[in-house]
Amino acid sequence: MSISTLRIVWLYPDLLSTYGDRGNLLVLAHRARARGIDVEPMQVRSDQHIPHGADIYLIGGGEDGPQAVAAERLLDDGALARAAESGKPILAICAGYQLLGESFYANGRCYAGLGILDLRSDRGESRAVGEVAGEGSPVLGIGPITGFENHGGRTHLGEAVQPLAHVSAGIGNDGATEGAWAGHVVGTYMHGPALARNPRLADLLLSWAVGIDPATLPPVDDTWPERLRSERFAALTPE
Ligand code: GLN
Image 1 (cartoon, rainbow, N blue to C red):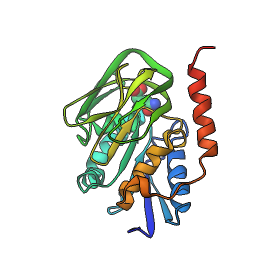
Image 2 (cartoon, rainbow, N blue to C red):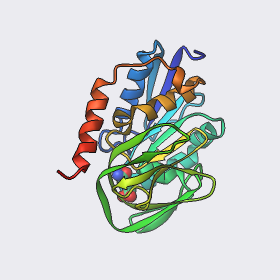
Image 3 (cartoon, rainbow, N blue to C red):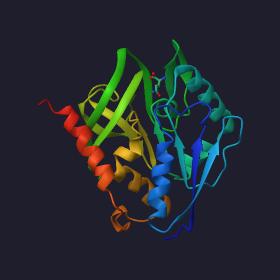
Image 4 (cartoon, rainbow, N blue to C red):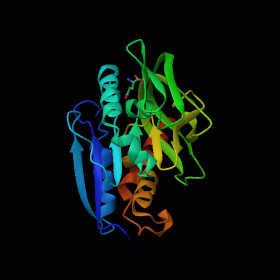
């Protein structure tokens, strides 16, 4: 593999880190190390510069206030947009997902997003809270997706992005689709954390970072993630 040390940036833990989204960093680190790849996790607070040249960038969910502050600081910093342009994998959750778009609403106001993903978020009539599940994009080959959602925003996709999944339970973007992706940038409403519940998505991000076909990643023991997935899918099926 072309990478010996994988540098994973976990952005703005001081602002955006709800529902255990930092678990995405732990899952990626675990799955990389299990394949013999050294990992250098880097937590970058909102008063620090975002390093250039890392291999994967992660950003989590958060409440409206911290979300608006995070968007402002990310716009000022500029490194995340440059990382996206240079093809670095980015995984953004909920508030982090919304702020990668063109615009989003927080505390009743419309804010400019980073414009990395062609989408816009406004507000729904009620909060979407609970399990979200669906069929993942066949192009990405991530299988059925499962997560937990809690958001007031609704997201409308433009033509330059694809949905991450079609929703069979919960709301996701708008009750029909969930999340979005373009190039190596993935946004989703799924907490859970998303990568603990969706190991194929974790491996996809790793394969992008390393520059290989995900099918060629050596298998890892997924007994526990599969048990978790079965439990969460079963919880959606009426007895
Ligand atoms: N503040 C955003 C909303 O409510 C995102 C919430 C979240 O990240 N869980 O839509």
